[in-house]
Length: 413
Length: 66
Ligand code: HEM
Ligand code: SF4
Image: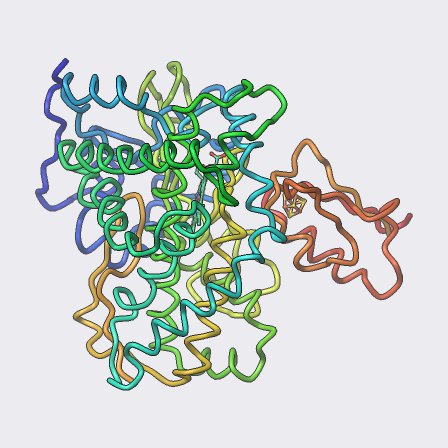
């Protein structure tokens, strides 16, 4: 089946309430004024671009929509709808691997057990097992550039961390981290608006992971893939079907890399411009815990999507079956009705129930891992590089859409 | 003062445990439960209130008079 090419026009936006464009370069760089405007004028905005979608921007709407899993399904969490892969590619993916990425792309009951399988491996305690090696990794990255007085905090640092940590958890050779980071970008970044790129990237990731799964079946080890192959949970089939294991591993790679890299990158971008915050974190090391939450709130990287399961009225909007909703968690976290001075980064903000990791049953399963990586990355950087600044603020580039964060962020020290 | 986690609402963000480890315990999957019968020892009232206001699921309730 070939679908109509989606409306992907890129003319400038005149009215953000009825025609927003999440890929507008100005919006990606600085979306905050637009969200403020939308919250005031039209808290659930609409667009026909990129396959069409609705976009709520208030904290309350995000919570309500996330809670209503009957009407707002997670069957397709990608934010753009630029057509399906060709029949051939689809058949290939399905025959070889059976596509899907549970639990993120599923609703209960499958969601319930596929999430239950994962959670014990991502608890605070389990994640702490990887802290020391994450620290060593950060130090070795810094060793590579400290003498140069200059580094790209996004490329040389932030990007290098989550791919290696998740590789280590999955028992994948870390040398291949660069390769699969590019595949993940192909899927979530470049491929978001280009279905051929996206399915090509998916194919590469699935093939690679499939080799790893076969390997682990023959030689089980102390890694997540081996764990999933023999894991049990209430309501889950026993054993877990292999395509499910593959889909979950796919999700862990895709959900764990761009996201955490973006949040570490945004944190570095913020600190490079706020020497007082660096100084506070050095003088009061215990501030790091609330500071990580505050940086997550202010620079939330992730927007997910829902699909409407039947025609429904929501907050004055007539939604139709299969309409897409963009879960703009980042905008909710800047809602002045919920957060005092939302545009200010206050490292020791006391009341901060942010939803950067989502809210409700799909709450990010990797949140404790992501927090640990952010904390360690910031701590290790500040130990060695207490003072640094952006080389050229104009030269910083951002990616956006599903995941927002800096992609080039040169700093000098 | 007494606190209680509504286990139906808790989604395991673990924010309560991080701000007030004395008052909450987590199971292996990260879901929270109040320690013991939820009675807040003297001196920990402020921490208990912070746990309530930082929970994104609004899963923790507090009874000031018990
Ligand atoms: C700062 C970094 C991260 C952010 C901001 C983030 C954000 C999110 C968000 C907003 C969701 C909710 C999706 C929804 O409601 O549809 C989610 C789900 C998920 N994330 Fe993360 N994530 C991050 C890092 C990670 C890491 C490191 C992993 C694991 C390696 C991970 C694994 C997952 C999984 C498995 C889900 C699906 C949970 C479910 O559907 O039940 N994430 N993430
Ligand atoms: S902060 Fe709320 S949702 Fe999170 S573990 Fe505690 S009670 Fe549960």
